[in-house]
Each structure stands twice: as C-alpha cells, then as structure tokens.
Length: 437
Image 1 (cartoon, rainbow, N blue to C red):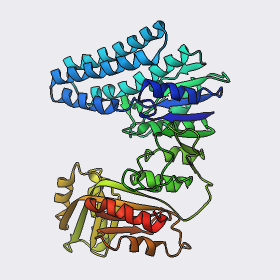
Image 2 (cartoon, rainbow, N blue to C red):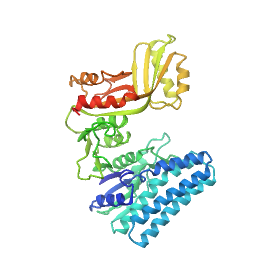
Image 3 (cartoon, rainbow, N blue to C red):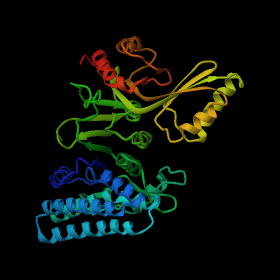
C-alpha cells in the first residue's frame, strides 16, 4: 500500500480537490493524507490571536468571512443537492464550533483545537465528494490513531497498533485522513507543528510498512536552489535520505524537516511529485540513490549568531560544556557551531529566550550577538574523496563576508553563515559556480 500526501495548495479550491480525486482514484488501495485548504491555517492562527487578545468582534468577523469562503467551495465542489446539503452541514458544524470559542476562556488547549479545524473540514469535503462520485472510499480519523508521547514525540507503537485495527481488506479502498493533527499523551487535541502533514504521511508509511510515501505539492520535485530567488533552477531527480534531511532542515520548503526520519528508519522511499504536473518524474528520496556530486543549495532564514569569548574562569573543556548546558537549559537548538580553544560561536533560529541565554553566558565570557543572519547550505557528496568541492564553494562566496563555516561534521553538508541581506547574492553565486546557472 502507498501513502499519498497532498498539501494545502493541492486542495486549495474545489477544482483542485477534484483533480486530487482524479489522481488517487486509480483502483489501487492507498491512504491519502490531506492538509487544510491553502490559507486556512494562517487564518485560524489570526483568529486565535484575536481570541487571545480578547478582540472578540474581530474574531467573529474573521470566522464569518472564512465560512463564506468555504460555502462557495461547497457550491462548486458538489453536483447534487444531497451532497451540497451534506457539505453545508459540515461547514456549519465546524464554524459554529469555532464561534463557541468567542464566548469562553481561550488558552493553548483551545488554540490547538481551533487549528485542527482546517484539516477536519478539507478531509470531510474530499471524502464526501468521493462518495458522491461513487468511489470506494473510507474515512480514517487521524485523531483516532495519530498520537504523541509525554515528550511530544510520535508514539509509533501506538500508531501502528491502532492503524492495524482500522484498516480493512478492501482491494480498491482509498482511505482519507488528516495530516498535521494528532492527540498528545493526555488525549488532548494537538499537532505535529506547521508543515506536519509530511510528517504524518511518513509516520503512517512507517507504521504500515508502506511500499512508498508520495508527497504531492505545487512544484516538480525538490529543486537545486530556491526557485523563488534564483532563476533557472532545475529539479533534483534523486537524493539519499541524509541529503534530503539536510536540505529540509536547512530551508528547502518543499519538505518538512522531520518527514525523512520515519521513512529512513523503515527504508521506505519518498517521492516528491507535482499535482499541477502529475506526469513529471519528481524527486526520489531513498537509501540507495546513485549519483554523487553536489545536489542542491538551500537557505535557512531568521538566524541569530552568538559568540562567547571566554574570560578564563573555566578551562577549555569546562567552558564548552557550560556554554552548551546553558543552551540546553532554555531548549535553544544550535544549528551551527564553531570553536577555538577559548571561544565558541553558535547559530540558532530560536530566540525566545535569547536575553536569558546571553545573561547566563556573560558570567563566563564576553558575549556578542549578530541578528538578521542566514545559513546558506550546500548539500551533496562531501566525502573525503571528493576533492575540490570546498574550494569551488568558498571561491563562489569570495565577494561577501562569511560569519561562520561548518564543514566536516557531515559528509553531506557545507554550511555558511552570512548576513540576511547577502542571501540572494550567496544563493545566486553558488548556483553559478556549482550548476552553471
């Protein structure tokens, strides 16, 4: 069985939903993971912000506006009065539920429930459309099997056990389920964070030992650079799991960073495909992909660099240990690190507790902070036998200041910290040097 995930753009309108159904209704048994319709989660976040801020009238108006949008999609999606009425009922139930939060206390618990409504609505709309068209479809509620443990990590044993009891044996049955949403260890509605629909698909694939996981988006596979910034990019046709994971973590928007982990552990290939151009080959991610060399460039935004120059109170080994203990205590992940005997520089995209971190670090040395930075990452075969790659990359960035360099910790990655203002220049220069474009 295959697992297919379709993102928000792929189900962003009634016509796109119909196209998704056309793609999946090929007579083969499969599980289909759907995101919320494009723009919906952002709007639900805005509604939540209004509710937190007690801007109740504004929240009510936004709910009414979003409901009107969905009412239009229902009219366009269904062709019979029976299913139009079913669609209207679904919309009314969910938006009446959203309105119930306008009159009550609003906390993080309620926010998670609000954010779940987008996926719940989109899946019900597509499922009912399939029934209207006579397809063999079944509804598979993610809240009945997708669960995280007390540490917030997916409980794969729970997922596997509960999915096994929910899947029938019909040869042509298509199961429709939600991405992103789940329950936590306390049985509360929660989520896998933004972009988590990819993660859902990969977790399901691992749980059922799927033949393949397909991630359908609005672009032909993963490109060798950011097509929104760099001209003449091209799709990368194959990547190893490690290469794909590096690219996802360092900014390739097509793939959720955590998506690769379950698939890699289970040895399940992941195929990135384009709903707008379904005949395109896309990008295959697998453990046995051939072809070395440089595969792609990505960039991670909103990076802050923190440099600590030791004041000598601690020896070198104790100094490094203490620095990283401080970052750990505030749960601030480190994206890059460079060290000398008594100096350490790190880069992170999490700044919620930056002031507290800097204050504690100041007890052990002089602290300098640079904001508005960016990590430019080159991914491919960086093994010790691949001579000359580093020189090519460094030469490409010779005209701009580089704050940090990370090389050698991975055979798949060279990362540079540059100013955010230099991001476009860096990405374009790397494309010219590495891909002649």
